[in-house]
Image (cartoon, rainbow, N blue to C red; front, side, top):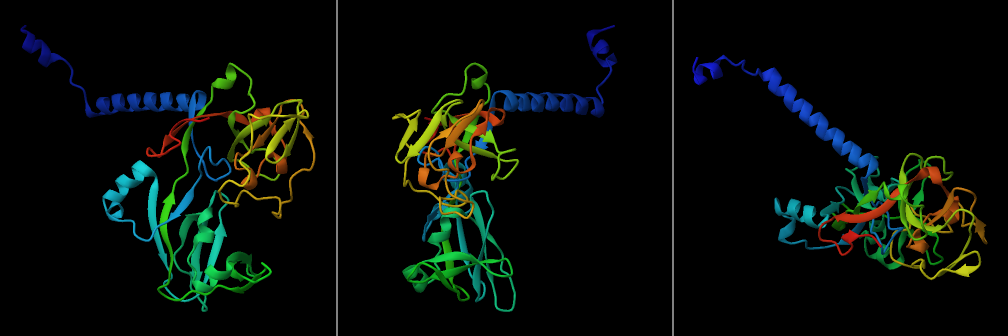
Length: 329
């Protein structure tokens, strides 16, 4: 029998066999990716401004004229490279602006008319709220969200004493927001480093909120590891003291720019910071945001248990055009 005849005699693969091979390959690839994510490096998005200027969360940049880069398809390329997404919001009818904080560094905004109609919502970073253009009166005296009896949080003008007064009203066709919605830094979290050494002061650590009172359960925070088990920590801004000794390597950026919500300050309704020195127990770590004035951290809700630690921030990998791209310090 010739070689050609032998080749023809070989059983041919069916479509089902080919599909099974591709499925096996896909399963292996997914398994490798999941193992890599679980044991080595895990992606994480910075949601708020509590770690500025080290890391930036979701933030906004007002812009009246975005130019050609926000025309399709260039806008998608611009977003891939810079993380910037241009958005506009115009009131479709007269009414009051209503905001809803989402707890993830963003808020939803919509217009509520006198007859109860509700406009489409726009989602913006939290720091965009004070930048909304609500007319000359709001620009002159400022505004703040106030919860009504119906549970909605409406924007109200501030009076001379700083207290909220009458509701802000906008007209049909009024431009309220024009600008960029800039994504927070995307980083890789090093999951294996702490297998070879203990967590160290100064590490940028990611940890689970599970079991920590006053935090949203089932999510993750990122902060600077400031005090280790057994140490006594005290913060007298702008300095950090460990066991009575000032630590120059950690100096919170008091007053750095960044949004206050959902990272409350001492005046927040959830209570102020714990006064005086705080001693860490066994397996407890004190976490602080670099943006000290705008960080809801261990000063408010206590230490992080060792079991909650996930890993250290390793590198910023997106957006690509980013002054913080590369290793995290």
